Image 1: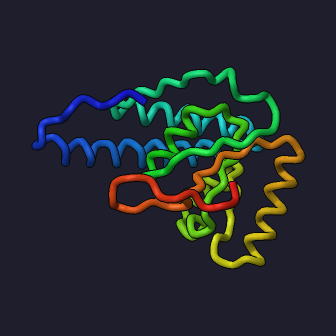
Image 2 (image 1 turned 90 degrees about the vertical axis):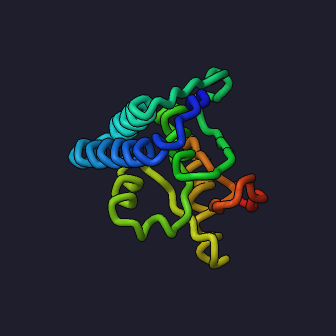
Length: 170
């Protein structure tokens, strides 16, 4: 993703409000549009287009280098994670065959949960070993069936700058 130009300090708050509004409206619009669509592939393409449009509307250009290096079938993409924007950028950048692996806590956010389920996200329980093992078996089965998965192995992010230690799993 290209670096945004430095904004004057007085524009930072209005820009943040604008960007939040743009992402929220496009996410809600995408959700409304994908609800009746029966095909997951088309839903993923639609959400990918909405993610790209939201990034473009906020002046963020996504450039994907070496996309040809991704295998056509099953694979796993592992990426660093420092904000909620990371998921949107990765969704805009990757082909729409990827199912994202997301912490189960996100299933408690009603609108996000509905959108994530409609695009085929996979929730994992990070706290309880028995549920975590069950979730891992489901992911392994999905991968064996040819599914492509995307992980943020840090599992979460903090307000402090820098990246966290990767959790095991991915």
